Length: 262
Length: 259
Image 1 (cartoon, chains in turn purple, cyan):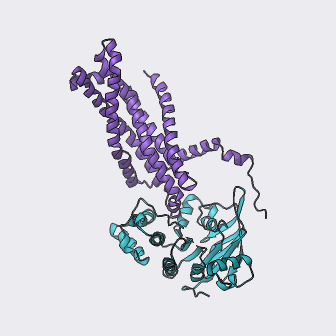
Image 2 (cartoon, rainbow over the protein chains, first blue to last red):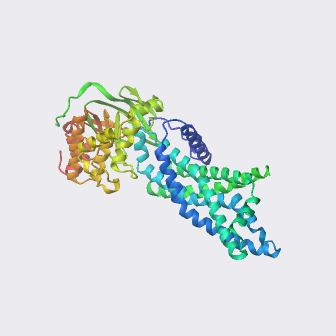
Image 3 (cartoon, chains in turn yellow, blue):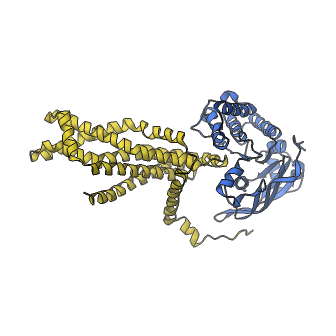
């Protein structure tokens, strides 16, 4: 028996197309900005997420940062040695770590660890109707789940980037000290004299943007997961792949913009 | 016929549905459905899988929007409410999901406190604990207060799910397959609990089920969905003591013998 007339022609195709995806992502982001400043605030959940994102990533970031600093120094030495310029190592390493390696590598680690976790957790909650259950119990699941996670990741990523920068430089120092017998004070004095306020500022801005990108992508994928357990896996996977891709695009744009101020 | 534990006020429909249509893409699910749920009444909705039973209660809770028709809950037209008004209306509605939908990263206590702290005037720790204990006592699970949902059995999860809805003292309960996946004894416990909730909290309920034992024991009225509409409505005997093939198939499957 025919019921309501179906309007599933051009509009419906558009609704399920790539353009519609972009529209939905924009709506999701706008909803975040609308909800983030509106009370009530989920302080407890945000602090819990800060702990999950920040504290629980420390070990991984420490290890990766230290190895990155050491390996990068080791790989750079022969090229500088050809020109007898190994004394430039602290400066070169500091610039590389502060400007590019710390924000980029930390954010890629956070995307892999935190982004996939957010995608899978929210996806699992979506397919088991936990998000709907929050809604029906007169609570705002978006505020509790999305706003808290995005705020926590956006705030924690710059801290992790600063920490990784320091650990990376420490790794580089160990390597330089082994080969050139440079003192701790001399290494850091030389290193810091090579970097400017703009380098640190740009790095922190990058970290904020990447943190936001990772968390909003993970939340969007998880919050809109469909098709049961398969959808949960897909949400986690897409969250990582898309956020990593976006981080590289953003890196390219931010570097161009920052270079205008040098 | 079941004797209702509360007086049903047939002048006061807490849910009134008229001419309800809902489709998903090209699939028509509900096609001109009418329903009244009276104060204090338990109505059981029966139907095949995919017949739109769960869609019906999601429409009542305002989780889906109808294509056509009106749904009035506690006098309010659900799809015309602003998000804030809808949130206020939902305080009067309790929803038990088929899979219980307990928040699996929280303990039983936190699951129950979650709607309470966000929807009540500020409560002290003592008042919160008292409210949580009271509902858990009512569902017989006070000893599981600090367990995680993963540590509970299917029947216990359903009980906690019911407790979580009761903590806000709803007027209307929506049960989605409350006995699905449970053994007969646990099902019987849940059926008893549904009746106790009706009596103690004076709720009106829509109960979605395939289980005719549950339907007979909890329903003051039964409604059978066929082709997106209620094809039969009335007491258990009125619905099943007929020549209706759909009703007969349902009865035969559940009780094996002819009605």
